[in-house]
Image (cartoon, rainbow, N blue to C red; front, side, top):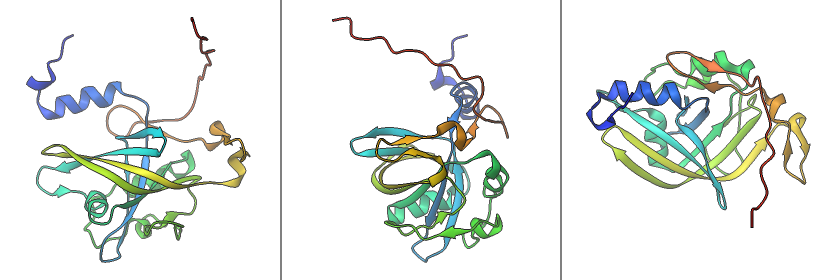
Length: 205
């Protein structure tokens, strides 16, 4: 089936992309408004871009009537955010922070989450998350009337000690993290399963 994306309605384009680009890592993002109000929300338009410098990208969507979410507004205003990864045991808490709440509501409190101060940025870290990346914005790109891409530099990373196999070599026990990822449709997620490994071919020169 051929899909001319330029001729499709926005909701159909969204369904095709999110049903096929899976699994997608989830960035559970905390921010702080210029007035000091903390905010948390998950985003699955998220990934790593590179390591020199270490960078991540967030795709932030605008609601057709309400505009950008608090997370996006805060990032654009302050240039700082913390991207956490989500273990399976925290899925319900993550889902709670999806709520469409007024800007003065702290979703971290709503979800009963404990926070700790970050080391290099203003937004707090979610204490129970096993991985957190403190980020400062490198650039923002308005890629369309309803979406903004934010590229952030990871200025420091936090990984819970029990998942660090060898700090000097950067070895992390990835499977033990039991991170969830976003799948297709409303409310569908995945956990690591049925893994396989391939040996990368050497040079043909």
